[in-house]
Length: 160
Image (cartoon, rainbow, N blue to C red; front, side, top):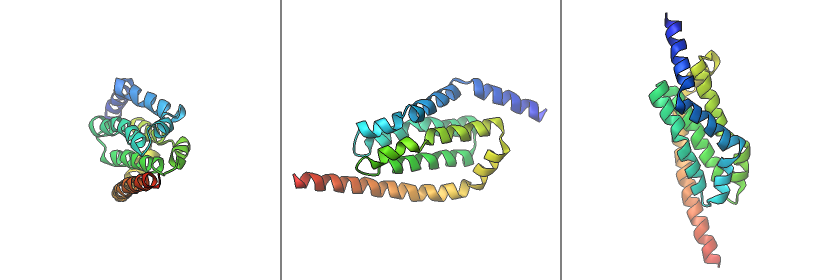
């Protein structure tokens, strides 16, 4: 009976419009490089922050549909890593964004969780606390990067 309920829930999730949206977003953001394009098009780390706003959909899905704190922490962790990579100055971060497919990684975690992939679930659960600690560190690094970018911008303006 428990397996039957799980199968019904899995089918419901797979057929939901938000699940389809997540799959499309991961395709557009990583396979069509929209994540990197936003970083190139909107300078100063703002494109990367805009790209991260898209990740909120993944986070909300994990919180409200899947109700998994460890998975939510893993998704937030991937998102913060993507922001940091994208914020590396002088377009280096934007180039690295092409190779760092955080949206595909997030979708793989979500699909594994929905499908009941024991390996992904075990990995996510094992790394939940580590993800929380890393997230706090990443938030600190992001704040530092923002201040560094502001400082570099002011320095460049003062040169001219």
